[in-house]
Image 1 (cartoon, rainbow, N blue to C red):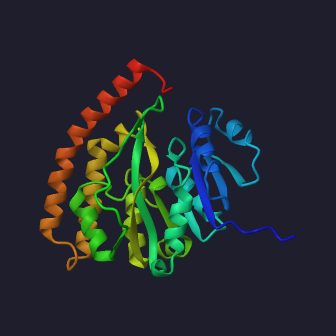
Image 2: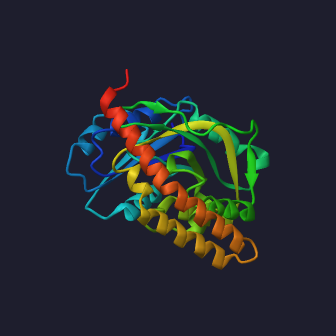
Length: 284
């Protein structure tokens, strides 16, 4: 009997993720959609990450790579390079996807009217280190929206941050990824990729919260530093420089102002959330 090929590849890059990796993997295994594979690519962990990963007895975990320390960029690219499916989702080691996530995204990406779509993205919630859930942005529209290249690049530049979302909020086509090239960079490695994927198809926004991004000292506050703001600014300038007819100087200035204002506000907010989380303890 011929093995059924997976329709979605879930790529999970890891590095010293023993605290949350089991929750992340379980959130994938609990999907209502079942025809997927999980690929783990570990970046030289020195804790129990690989031991925990190998404790899962599920045939959908199709590959576990234990790499020497290569860095986030190469680790992300290694996980995607081994994906067999036409649709790919990268989920970081402490984030979650909700049970209906893959089913919703698969139906959207395989709909006849969406064959021009390079990737889809959705809203997400937040998780504290103690797994308390904080609701993300309200859904302002009930229908999905398709973004052209011009619309999406403007959206990215004008937002002053990652207006698309972290990897677990995105599902992309392998064909578009191959045309765009590998992941690049550090702080905005995901946003930089989304800005290139849209060169090879449109982007589809799904008006639902389908995943959760974990707030922590490493994943949340590190993404709100001045260094990260500076890197987003560099990316926005690059987009504007390469697309002068699509992105205006006004778009760029607006994004710079919004980004600069959001950094201290979000840093303070994240500290308050983490303090409150420590005080109240684990979610029940």
